[in-house]
Image (cartoon, rainbow, N blue to C red; front, side, top):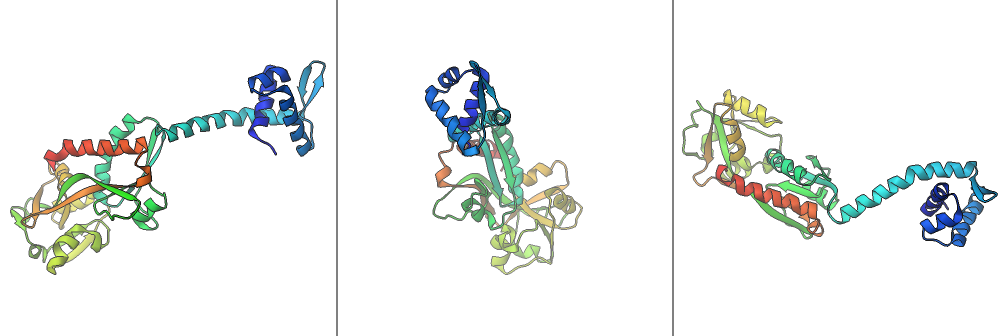
Amino acid sequence: MLERIHLAILKEIDQCGSLTAAAKQLHLTQSALSHSIKKLEQQLGTTLWIREGKQLQLTQSGQYLLSIANRLLPQLIMAENQLRQYAQGERGTLHIGMECHPCYQWLLKVVSPYLLSLPDVDVDVKQKFQFGGMGALFSYEIDILVTPDPLYKSGLYFEPVFDYEQVLVTANNHQLAHYPFIDPEHLNNETLITYPVSVERLDIFNQFLMPAGIMPRKHKTVETTDIILQMVANGRGVTALPKWLALEYVPKLQLSLVKLGKKGIMKKIHLGIRKEDLSIPYVNSFFTIARQLSRLDKQSI
């Protein structure tokens, strides 16, 4: 039935005015061109052009197909060019999945230089997945997973790109504010404010409180970092955050940072990707910029 070559033929005939010139432009023989259109006319049951002397005159059907050709052919050419750029890693949309709230703040630091360095690549960020972050990677819902807790599975590659320490954040006048470090028992009578994430996935619980058999007096959940820290600064509770993130708020709010345990809780932000996508240049560029950011920020972690 109708194929791209038919549209191209009608467009060239309209521009060139003759079968010979159109065939030359399309690198076809005149007989091949005529045969192609004649076969299409038979299939459609309508005539696309008629001869008037030496000139070809498009019929109403031919004029309609020409209007289609003028709209579609430039779009097809553009699509092909973009697909070539995709294949060469020069253009695309990088779909990023986030598995932790603080990771979003870190991501903003990477996205800005990334977009500046790759003007033909867009970024899309997803924070909620139907089957979790790992499922989103396997189902091609996302291209990169940003997570502090990688799960190493066949076909996936994870790379640590950012080291940080998880710390307790209190108001400056809180009784724990000037401790060199705290033990789990110190939170026994505290209100702990966290993001609305299951307890099993919160480091303050699974790496600090639960192993010691301790639970805070009260557990509150708040969606945004700004509100959490406003509540902490006003004595409504304490929270646990990456040190690098909490330090950004210390100049604005009356906050103190306290080590969790004598050794502290050290974490890493990992980037996860399907191994088959490791060779895509614009994906590799994201990893490169993330590594560069990590080196620049190490002194502030």
